[in-house]
Length: 261
Image 1: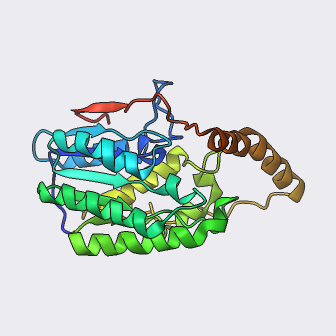
Image 2: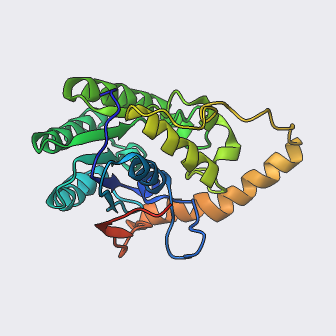
């Protein structure tokens, strides 16, 4: 799907990426903005009539929850565009079956397309330089290949995060090194808008930032220790105890509404 078109109801499903972490809301401390909210604002601006948007994504969710719980709720809202991004949390599990994950994602895409709605997917980012998860780069690459194949078979649009060099800059990532900064989310939203066939007014969204000055080794080591203490340790503890950052959380935007500018 490459031709620009307009939609009247967009529903986003997924995990923390689509919920919007760590893109802080300007007035509400309890919610995030994120690329999907930003994309919805772009789509509303080009819509010819009424446009509404819902976001059912919740941090920490595995793909089974995205496809088994969020998807039926999304389809009940009768969207004509659905973004589904999931599997990132599954890939980090020791016994992750990437082919099976892709199969579940494709089944979800088939269900969405059967309603007549369009589908927006997203590849993972390339974790080559990321701490810890760079060791499962092969899994991310395999899942990325599956996503492109699914998109080709079913006529989906794809946000090519793997190929977006601007996201390889750590200034696009928050202190936890897992979620994007507002600037990262802003650029992904523009990438999504372009993937849906539109031409963003800003033309430099895919251009990397100018090179950052070198960071002294002692400062890098200090930052690594702080990250391990404040972010990696709690993440490992949750995995060992079977807990999730999204436990007891509900979607931030369960009903379709006009998106904020």
